[in-house]
Image (cartoon, rainbow, N blue to C red; front, side, top):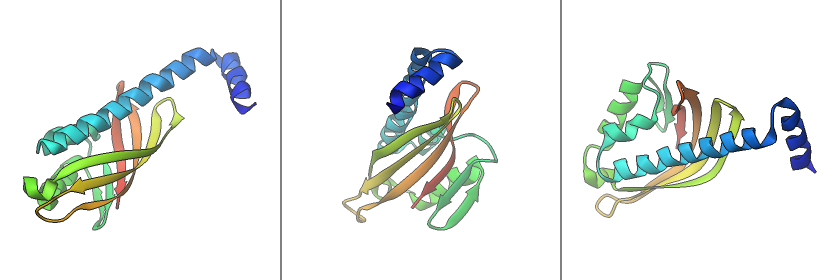
Amino acid sequence: MKKAFLCLTLAFLGGCGQVMAQSAADRKAILGILSRQEGDWNAGRVESFMKGYWPSDSLTFIGKVGVTKGYQATLENYKKRYPNRASMGTLKFSILKLEFLAPDAAYVIGRWHLTRPEVGDAGGHFTLLWRKIKGEWLIVSDHSS
């Protein structure tokens, strides 16, 4: 019943199929970025991993040590916390929820896990706030714990 009402409402506003297709494409784009980030991390390419983030001084990262503002500061923190392949380990994301808040805003809730035989495994949860900026989905806020 809710889905039928939503489609009727969206049809009135411009077409259910068009809006649904947009969300499917955007969902695929976001999940693709997360998959690419896993691959970049697992290859030791922190700079490439960071390409999923908004390259702005307004980027926000919230982690165990507090709030970090800015792309460069976030990159430097990753490099400091994970200085070598042993500390980086093998990253695996598990996506628990991906929801669109607006045509240009979404959030993702998930789990991260690092398999690190030499230094011990690590993991936790994350919430990512995404914005579509100039046609590209980017993480504008990351809360990982």
